Image (cartoon, rainbow, N blue to C red):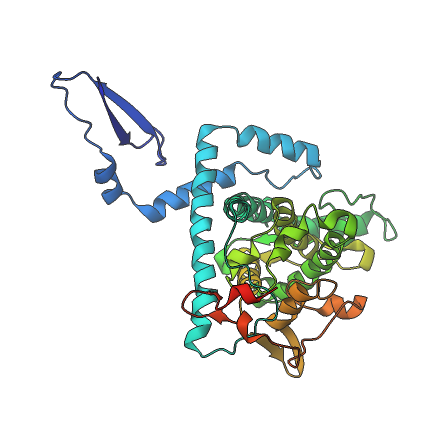
Length: 396
């Protein structure tokens, strides 16, 4: 029986990538083993450079900012299909997915454990806690975690595809000057297809250069991203509670009436719901960055760091919403986040549909405040050692 040696080598190109080479040696042939074994390569591999090159290759698969008008959605989809069909691209996506699954695990553990060191208050359990996950629960959690890699690729890929290019400012200024010279009252012909309203209502760019980071493109967009995200999420969440569709999608998430496992409970949803919720971040990024002509909002530049802050804070807040930690954030007398509001939603589903804020619930009339005087069943409280109910058989 021939022996098989697995080898990790460097590709013929200047950029290193993963490749598998099979060396089949007949027994007793005396053939030398490959000089680069897995262990020897893993010890000498430059990890930061490896991940940087992975990111560069993935960035190269994305459409470039169109200089002759916007690409249609069909053209973009065809471009991505062609670029991502190569083995190298699939491996790169797999690496990206693995990295962000680990990041999600790290965030979940931080959200779950760190507040305990600060003696955070605990929200009493009032609904039945889902102590044991079924196979379906585990399958949904695993699949949704793996979907984060595709989401991150699309999210930052979109910001890269609308990035600010050298000379953009000069080009726009030249267009405006030329327009004024020809006709002071001239109105540009334009359309609002995929991100194309630079000349009529501004339209921000994705900022990637470190020397161009500023409060205006990094900090200021974040609150608006949350507000825009939650507008659409509140509507989506309400729609998922419509009786005709509730049983098919969202009911699975409400098997847990007292969430406690942070991001694990947060992502324990139907994959369709998870995908809609995640890619809603991309919709918010598009609308905040490129503008919303219907409300005369002209858009703003959004940096990669601002986009990262948005989804990072979003992951932390979504995790806190699914713990027993009483986490509250206020600006003056205004409460902008309170994890108890989402706990109310898990007990009383026809309320508090917002993910990060209850701003839109207050506007739409679906807000229900937390009542500390609601009845608490002592038997329903969780054992801090096991994270499960102390006497589950007494809970209906």
